[in-house]
Amino acid sequence: MAHAQRSGILNYLLEGPEGAPVVTLSNSLSTDCSMWDEQAPLLACRYRLLRYDTRGHGRSEVTEPPYTMEQLADDVAGLLDRLGIARTHFVGLSLGGMTAQMLALRRPDLVSSLCLVATTCLPPYHGRQVWDERVASIRATGRFDHMLAPMMERWLSMKFRRENPQRYGEIREMVLRTPPDGYIGCSLAIAGFDVRDRLPEISAPTLVIAGEEDPGTTVEDAQMIQAGIRGAGLKVVPGARHLLNVDRPAVFTPLLTDWLERNC
Image (cartoon, rainbow, N blue to C red; front, side, top):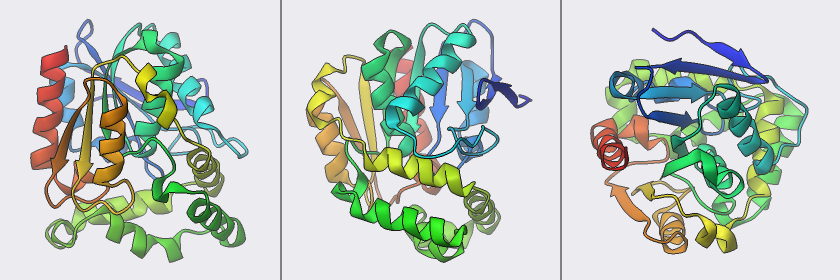
């Protein structure tokens, strides 16, 4: 069992056999590293598995907003450097996938391969307005309650919510624990993110995975990334919404493990 540790401002979990290829998992907005609980036990059997909480989330330090995507990428680059990890296969979902793209642009030396999950190369919904409105709402109320129901509707299918009430409850509680300043900071990082024109600079082998029914980071967003990164592959998970590693683990996890096996 891995124990949470702190390096710099980031909380992290490192487990799995020493000397094995390193796989890093990066979380989405309003989550922490427990969002990967469906995949972590299997991955840690074969790989040196690093999970961390993005700045302002989970047990990582909550610094004053705004944040930038460059800052979030530099955070994880610093963590990898401090841990002596020279190369990693980097898997990021949503905000984590944006962080992954920025890391590959700023520190290509660290990235062996990319798996970009339920993400985009520009702000979801293709503009700042949605993000500015969400930030204003959290600043005004300091609470997530009013945002929770529509968020869960976007993230998880009705089938999942009906059949997995315990895990659904855990996801809800994880969202509600998100520090307001962390949400605001990362939302502003998302609002300022646009690497469409820089995608051809990414040379790492890349797989993009999208949820068929994801309304925020759509299949079309995934196709944009695939078109921009030379040789990138694309897989679409049928019926999956945004948090697709939780919503459809029976489909997502084999896609991820097959990708890692072919690139490690």
